[in-house]
Amino acid sequence: MTQSKHTTVSTQAGPERALLVGVDWRKREGSAFSAEESLEELATLARSAGAAVVDRQMQVREKADSAYLIGPGKVDEIAGLVKGFEIDVVIFDHELSPTQLRNLEKKFEVRVLDRTQLILDIFASRARTREGQLQVELAQLQYLLPRLSGHGVAMTRQGGGIGTKGPGETKLETDRRRIRTRLAQLERALENVRGTRGTQRRQRQSVPLQTVALVGYTNAGKSTLFNRLTGAGVVADARMFATLDPTVRMVTLPSKKKILLSDTVGFIRNLPTTLVKAFRATLEEVTEAVLLVHVVDGADEDAGLAMEHVENVLNEIGADETRRLVVWNKADASGYTAAPAGAVGVSAAAGMGLEELLARVEAELPGQALVQMRLRISASDGAAMHRVHERTRILKKEFVEDHYEMEVEMTDGAARELAQYKHLRCDTV
Image (cartoon, rainbow, N blue to C red; front, side, top):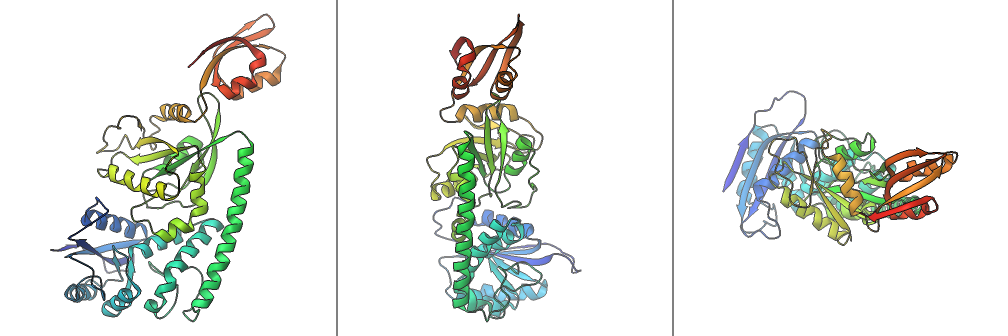
């Protein structure tokens, strides 16, 4: 089976013209996604990188061709399409070996990328902090090292276009020894970053605030939800991997308990192993969290499969035993399906369901049972009143003679702190 989809795109100066290539293996293993669905996601990635997808080609094969991945006849066909459609870059939905990459570039006479290179390129354009840039550069060099001979002219192919956002070196004369030296430098720099992040984390942990991490498939709406809950102003748009660098902000729960909420990089199926390793410092925010809020695009017909891929990555980084709360996002979107049992339905964009979400987050936190208590505090004790307003949710308040009597709801930890003001203890809720 050969599939071709043509789209008319202007030949004037503008986005790079990309041709996508997928392979449908007759004996597919390990993925419930079809080859067509995977190629559609590749198209989304390509557009996120700034390309105009002009054509898509699919070939069914028993096994990979050692020289080209696809068959020689298909290679010749695509070479003709490259010239006819004035293609700038050919992107494969599969990882290419150094030999395959070199052979395909010779045949097509344009740049050739595979899925991993495309994702690395998007990461390179999105990283804003020094930590993110170091992590991307490390992943790029680790991937590029065995493929140097396939590029031939310049190691990073600096300049305009997809696949040219390299890690900072300028010439191919930088040999393997120099690249390994640079890799060692990056590892040391990232260890320093991890040390700094570890210090920051320990400082946060010295204050009794628990960390909750948002996780989810890329473009599920994590950053939009994070902004709604924290007012942080994190970049949130429809592009995949719109934000890479982790952001941590304080959030106040209904009982007035405060937590730290962390926004993390979005996951994707077939996330390159080099990226998972390089972004260890970022992903540590996930592994250190006491609760993971798994944000799912409830309008995505493949939501279940996306959840499965997120869970696979979480298991890979050692977060398999951390408790989860599923958030079924985009409740205001067309195609939205009802949230499954146990999940919280919200629309981060419209601000729907956020109060219920915060209440559920609080209920899911380990060791944080809510209690109700009656307090009696002197009207002149301003410090105590301030603590009550900071640590509790006031259900009822009345002034009796020179004291305030209040019914409040709070965590059991806050109840212990305010025990000296207890007037009448109610039942645990």
